Length: 197
Image 1 (cartoon, one colour):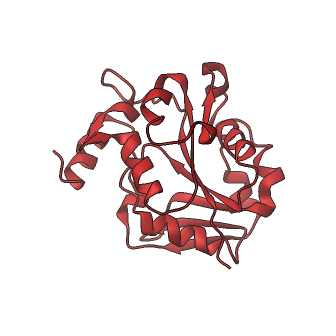
Image 2 (spheres, rainbow, N blue to C red):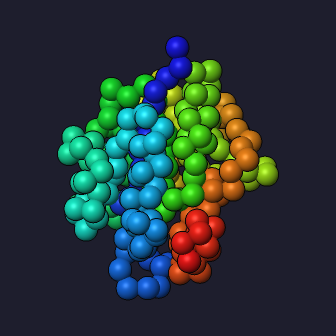
């Protein structure tokens, strides 16, 4: 039986490198925003989706995600780094059959890529997307790593787990697994790639 892991869309970061007014995740992209486009693609997998975010963005997420699947961090909690955010998301979705960590600023990741990484968790404790040999997202973690994941802290995220456990790099024909929105130039490139300049 293939697992149906929960896709954790991570949207609690501060986005400090983004220069324009407003949060990078709230920037328009097509009919939605950077974040809602990422969420839509996750929902298209048909797998459970949860979002870890802050009060600033929660209202824009709530039309897409059930309240029970929305993990809202305080500003102080969000400032504790990606590791803390992942731990909070996994703890809130403790019944998951694994978890795919997908940054909210990666709206070009295809649903098929998420499915491929998630299916790999049936045989591997960790799997991650890569494109042309470069590591990208999502990164998937099997349910057996629950205790490790809820203990994460700081900005390092889950890198130490990837270093400690056998991790499967899954080569995908999806450049979107490498493309995030950190700057205004990144946003322009994403809009061009999505055909919504």
